Image (tube, rainbow, N blue to C red; front, side, top):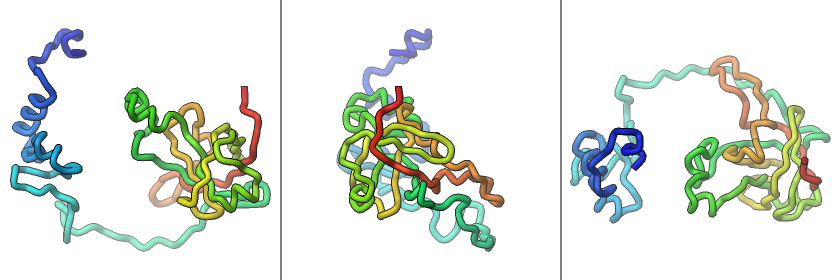
Amino acid sequence: MLAGKMGYPFAYRSTLEINEEMTSLTPIYGGMQFDRLEESYGLQWPCRTRQDPGTPTLHVGTFSCGLGRFHAVEYRPPAETTSPEYPLLLTTGRILEHYHTGSMTRRTKVLNDMFPNGSLDIHPEDATKLGIREGEILSVASKRGRIDVPAHITDKVAPGLAFMAFHWKESPANRLTNAALDPTAKIPEFKVSAIKAEPGTPQK
C-alpha cells in the first residue's frame, strides 16, 4: 500500500475492512455497508443505520439553518451572443465518467477507455449547415482562443448550441470560454460563449 511506502502502514486486508471502519466512525455513513451498496445502485447519505433507506433529497421544507433567502435581480442578457462569424453558442460541463481536470478519473483505465478524449457535441442540423462529419477533427474558435477537437453529432443538444466537457488538457474548453462576471454572484459566464466550428487541420 502507498501508506506503507510512506512509513504509515495500515492493517487493512480488504476494502471491506476499510468500509467497516468508515461506517463505524462516520455517523452519516453508518448504514452504507458493502452488502447494501451491492444490492442497490447506491445509497445517498445521510444514511445512518442499516434500516435507513438513505436521503434522496437532503433538505425538505427548510434548510438546517432555516429558510433560504431569495432576492429578485434584474434580468441581464449574456455578455456575448452569436454573430455571423461565431454562429454557435458553446456551453461547457462534465460527463459522468470524468471529474474536473481528470487528474484521478483519467488514471482509471475503465473510465479512460470509455471516454479517452473530448468532443464537440453539435446538433445534426448545424453539422449539415457547416459541412461537419462525425468524428472529424474540428477547428473550434472564439474571440479568445482556438482548439482542435473531434466532432460528435447528436440531437442531445439543441440546434444552435454546442457542448464540450472540460476534462481534457488536449482540448481545453476554457480556452474558448468568456470570463465576463455576473455583477451579483461574481461568477464568470463560462456557460455562454459564441464560437465557430469548421473542419480543420490540427495545430502542431
